[in-house]
Length: 268
Image 1 (tube, rainbow, N blue to C red):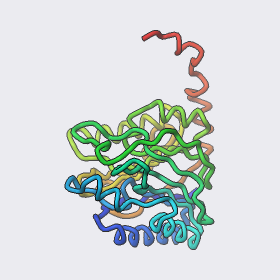
Image 2 (image 1 turned 120 degrees about the horizontal axis):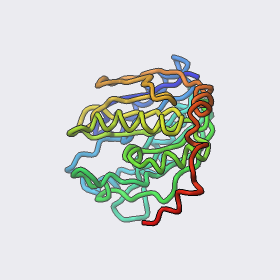
Image 3 (image 1 turned 90 degrees about the horizontal axis):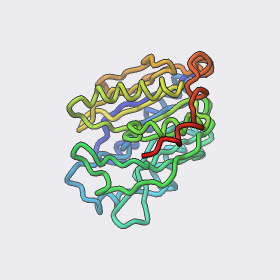
Image 4 (image 1 turned 30 degrees about the horizontal axis):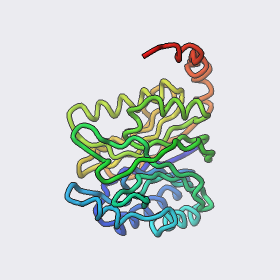
């Protein structure tokens, strides 16, 4: 099954980014991709000078113009879309970092609010955001059963394992991976390991430019990199074969061989 990943540099202009997103969805559909996946913070780039109040004022609900326009474009082009947006929350001057899955009929079939905020390596997302309270159940798409993660979530193997154990054949992690010492090495290693240890595909669209490193990746269930977009903006295509998930989990049955009966006996 053919799918697409978009890597681009989001500007601070929400409308300009939305027009870019629409164009990429159309390009993906023209190349017969069944699904098009976008990076984290695709709505707009938030620089360090933007206050929490300013960010909150620009956020929207799931029924707002940003997601509704993307849903309309998905329906018009008969393609599924995965992306993210800044979602309004009830907490004053805080937003959710929320991803969504839109089907080819233009319906939002799943949402996930990032649970692991990036409070590390000199950053504090919690100064502007509030975390979600649950992991979204895997959702059926034309590619297979998808488990949703967002960026920093990739550093927590418990989450990926929970999604895989719940039936995910593909993990998709819209990301905005910040540049820094060894950060690209971490990014590549973590995406490969999450695929290998769970016997699944990992699709990780990333932001490029501004403070982000790019290198959007697609990794197969045995750890082979199928797509690496390096530093260029644009759209990349790849194929998903669910037989590879089945075959890998058969010859390397890591999910089956877990000893969940024994793990809880470790006292800490």
